[in-house]
Image (cartoon, rainbow, N blue to C red):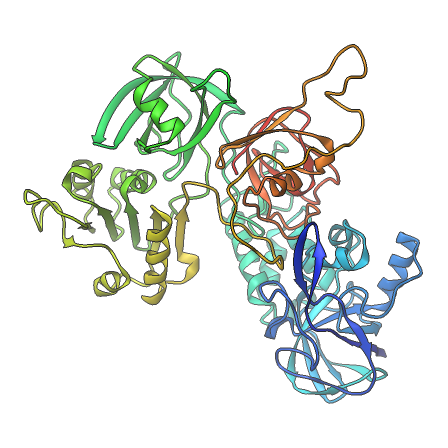
Length: 613
């Protein structure tokens, strides 16, 4: 019979880490005597980051003495104490390859149910002093698991652990963990996992996304692993939203064949292949990166522009807002002409129109109309019977881009409706024809429209607009999973547990590390230029130095907004589009990212790279 060896608790505390302050509850200590197990926690215990740990589904973390022994041998250490792996219960028995999700156990006065494997994150490595620990837990099939409390009661060291019921489908913790994080996502296994009622909602959502890929024919969720039949990685939709693979690597020359003004501050450029062959078709909502050289003495400027033309057309059209001090938009507005050639990267992006029969809400402000305009064009081309709402905010008729274009497209949709708001309409603007509302779109205005709750909403515009619209749609009953946003600049940061201070603009590193001789050193016949790292969304190019560590470390040194969790190539939170270049991995990711993307937490650049950050 399994036994509860130690009960471990600890409240979150602040610790210094990587030059930041980390708030974490990973430091647990063994306690004597009975402890009350409650619905959300053990008495005396807490978590620093409730987004990834704690809560009803993750009330108690369990780890086994047999795994302790394994890591002592593997890591050649003998300094472990109970709670070393951040667990609440240290147990003898209950191995991960035998315990199944949905199993129920009685311990002391309480009853528990297994809900999911441990969430892979960097904190367990921090606690152990082993940065690769998150990846090791998964690759060695020893993650540990969470339980929820079905019946509250007191527990203490020495209690017997009595199995009360077996989970349906008999899928072990190790099997469920590998199904998400390791290559080989068999459809049958995904279906089995989703038939386990006790599986926590977060893991259910991941497996549902992977199963949808399998049903649509994507090989990322097939039994063959993470790549297509040709061995091309297609990404893991259970961990992130992979971008469709780019049609070509790096940049390719394309010629401007048309320039058209849209409003006093917005103009459109149409691009074609130099040989006039059809360009690879783009999907509605995608963007392209363009590399410009406004000043020959400065590094190139790289900017992303959403495609506003007809999806699948033989040419690409972008629409650009002239920013008062924008280096790229000023260059495009004042210096390029028809016939000029630009360096263009292949269409990318995950802001894509879903293939479904549910209503569609397309919300935009100003030049944010560009990606949703492409979606509207795709719907009109199919004469889609779906309910389609076009909601757009502009200053007035003179600053309303694509007005005639949109009106014609909506006329091709049997269930298309338009809701345009002018914040300062001119006397010549026609209420009921050019616009429907005077003033700004706000939560109350959206509430009055009563948007369908089963709609998928696509938002693009200034940050404040998207924040207001997201809040309004949530208040109207739309689920967060149905609200999709596209951001012009840098994406929001995800740095779990790290205390955030005032936001700084991206900048050159304050210190160049000293990593000894290497590329670019003065030894040998002459210096070799070091690779450069360009953060496209942040407008920053930095010479690479091995002393930075990884691309993620360099981004953090430059205050480029970053997203990460495990920092060891497991969770894919840091997956980033690679516009051009290649990377080396150390360690190798447990599952490769989608083609055209990289995991910046465990990669370095042997050559110049451009990252979509």
